[in-house]
Image (cartoon, rainbow, N blue to C red):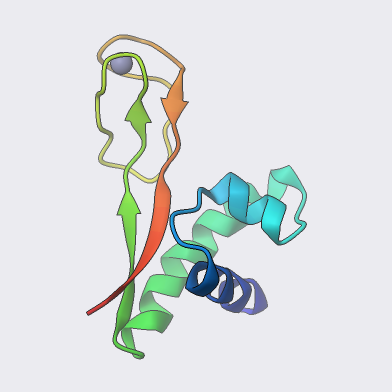
Length: 94
Ligand SMILES: [Zn+2]
């Protein structure tokens, strides 16, 4: 739960971060990126009670512009490129 609160506090001061940037900012090991994604999902629920939510700008293929409908992506289904712009997360008032 502590990680969720850290993630929320970070997004309150710095908007539009990727999970990797959150890892770096919180001085977590890169392999904990998965925990950060889980924390972001939980953060959305915690924030709802405060009248806020987490908005995701979905991952996007940098080659053809394909937009994913999931939180994480590694390969573009349209052009097979692995040059993916990661999802960014923002806080928003409800
Ligand atoms: Zn593509």
